Length: 455
Image (cartoon, rainbow, N blue to C red; front, side, top):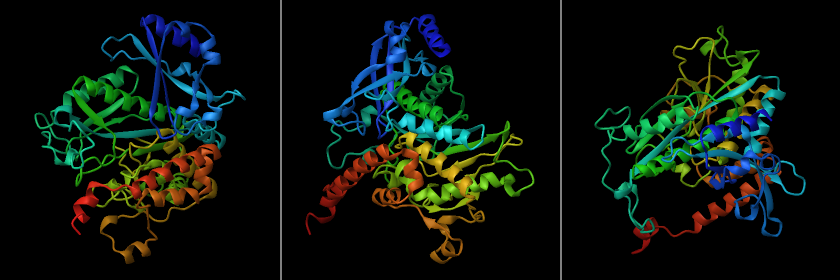
């Protein structure tokens, strides 16, 4: 009730006229609708929610049994003060089954919530997550008017002035846009660590401070993408979270930093161990490595994702871990200015992922490592990209899936990652993604014509 009262105060104090309801489908696409603020001053909307057509939302329901219910989470109500009129708010919705009035088992947010509960069920206080947001920004006037034309894509356009990693003004002329975006995030209660131009042409990054659990981290990820695209449109910019929009350039990742707490202290930190890595952290890493192939179907869920997972652009292709090693799947970053603290960075996710599913899979995999006491083996100190087959075998280093098809087969064979989603979501996810993979395999692309038309 306190959360409802707080939400209603925010609506009143900010003179909110319209409230946007936000939720994502199984693929991670944002779905929204707008209602006048008046119903949110009554109790019914907070208790009963409202009906919607679940068959029109990917992965939710079939047409013969399509009615579902969404209920607003009052703790997530947020005034969208950064919008031009400033009189709108957003609230995140939970999805319920209309017959049982229980949480819909295939709701991505509910799946992330189950992962957060697992952390506490295993005796930990919390598992904080901090995703890094990498994305590309294109000027609309340079974008092809007909995107269906075979050879029109960002790689054939004149590059926007771009100076690469940590480029200064005037070479980074998107800095004012990123400032505006970062200020909007901070006004929304999201603590920005920094922002900068990334290594690729048109590529940018905003990094935030850790969030309380998988649910909050995913909520913020969805909000970030919404804010970036919406603010970008005010600058006549197109913001893309496609993993690899520009050929022969660095792709966009969504590295995830994780830090576990127990008894008010970091459970990953041990001052007496190498790299200050506790046994709990080692087991957690062991779980990530064990389940990495299956997780990849969720952390890298598109055909395009695997065009990012190639050597020499600091995107992992091998299942290995190392301290400070950016060629590895799992990295232990330098903890500058942080005492008694340590985070584990998982580097293969990309921003095309449904964050609720990806974060849930990472959490469950790490917890399984702790539960099963999986040792990750020694840290890899070499550049993994430069290791030959013999060296990889000697170090026991395997490969991540090289295609979406391989990743889906790995998910089909991994019960732990399947359990992270639950049977309803995993079956719907596999069905949808197998169809997508088959569509790709049978699609005749411009590359086919260029290569084979005159054969």
